[in-house]
Image 1 (cartoon, helix red, strand yellow):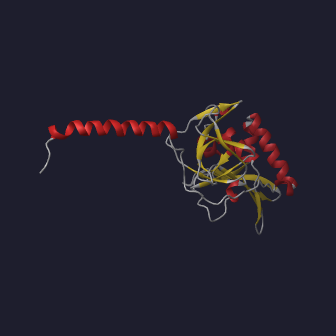
Image 2 (cartoon, one colour):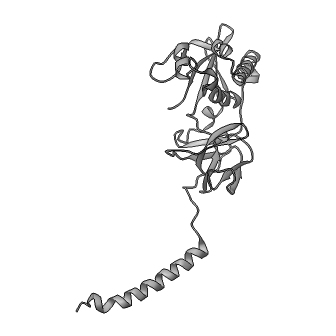
Length: 246
């Protein structure tokens, strides 16, 4: 025989109060569980730069980096191949480059200085062709082993980098890491923070031990972030493409 609501409600209420009280005690004692991701094998990927192996390339890159730091538009454009590739939809040429990076409007405010500056400071790899040499920067583009999906993993590009519990420089550091592979998570809107005179978004990462935290964007990079390709044709280095994506 079923019991009526009026017969059981006092007992149920009493049991609910007890269960709720116990749950509150347990939660107070343990606190919220830290975010976790699927663990994976830890692997270090050291910084690599072939540019010093080619004197002409080394000089070209240093001059280009100086031009970028000075926001010297004339020198930047002079370093471009006339048919520079700016995207995957047939966007070619210097005029297209200027349009994409808004260099015809307010050159000093263009994001190209920041993006290209980061690429140029992070090394790269030389490849030899039949009639010309190629250089691709940064080293991150080649650094990820084939076993790792380039759309899912990235590299820490610094030593002693803080992984923080929240996307904030004052948040607790859950771990310090070197140049290791991390899992990268996509977020609809990443918080951007200015530290010193540089501003970068925080990137949510999964560490090899399964912990999840945030690294300031200057110190972590995906292989499919912006990269630049250069070639030496007839003894003169030029930038052939500057693009991102897969």
